[in-house]
Image (cartoon, rainbow over all chains, first blue to last red; front, side):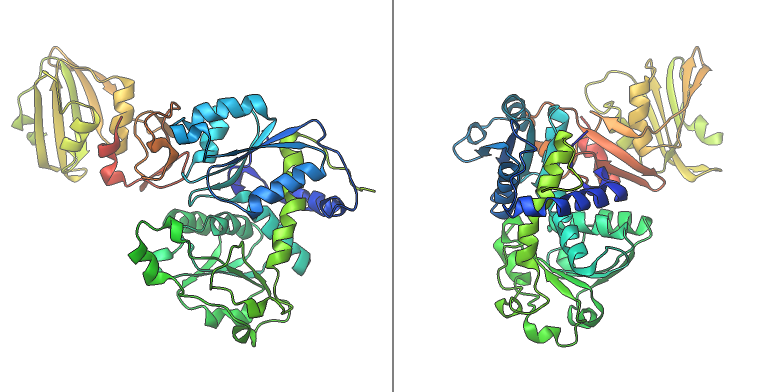
Length: 309
Length: 155
């Protein structure tokens, strides 16, 4: 019921409702108000792969709402001893009321959801999906532009392995976004995703050129070319550093353009963009807290009040 | 039906007609009839067909295909016609239907899919996204499968 594995698990109305709830929870996320909606609940934070923002923001979200967190990392746990995901999930079900899972294997979140009855939130499965990131991305876009309808969105970098772009594109086409997908040929968005998006009537332009689309963009979503997803280093070196966005690339940009990045960045996003009005990536990282609060409440069937004081 | 005379009529068993040309060997593999079976099997390949241009035909003696086997057949030859033969005549015609999901029939071929670990106990699940052209997707990792290679991943 409360699972979130891909963006297909949420209707457009549910997305908007969760964003509204996240907005209501902003003062709680900032620590200005203590609202123990999830008191007595335990979150299993299962990170079989490295994470900084996702793990910490889920933990902060749970704690700001009065809940508790138990952590699992694959290093030093029974996973390192060869335990199956199925068996691990049976244990997790006994220890927690809801679980967040990040795993290097694609499909691991759906597999976990099929293994147990507690709600599962997918925090990244290999090069698959990352829907909780998408929710905070949508929150950030709506915060900047006032709504989500009909925006020009550029996604730049590793669109093949970049799970954040997979989930985000699925969500944005429902709001009538025009997507410009900028990547080297070898890192294009997977064909099944592009074909799904087009079957939903999406307006998609795939290109290798970044510069030409910047002036019409409302959002530039930069991504890191992820070394860890490449089968060998030679292949990585061929495409590393293909796209670099710096402040001088933004001279023709719309005044309302926002630059986003799921972070961490390497060299694809110059630090000289940080001080411009376009930079939103650190705000975006903070927005993980209120949106994940709303998602935890949804998962646990806890109603978020219309107003908090 | 001149092409049917290329092989003798069978007394009892299953005749599979209208297999896409060149796919009879894949059908045998899909039905697990390619190894360790003692049933006599007759096969003709690339014979002229009014409906298909060219087609393959298989006759399997002393074996009536069950529904699970027909489901497998649907992956390679969704338009094949299947006749159960008893005492030299057609006793039953069976239709092939491609369901919406394949459970424990084929494994996902993607090397990074969670189901690649043989010790994971849940059934393999693949969704039929479309039958024409055939599009099959792993229910876990979401990767589309190469339909031409799918026979290599049967369970």
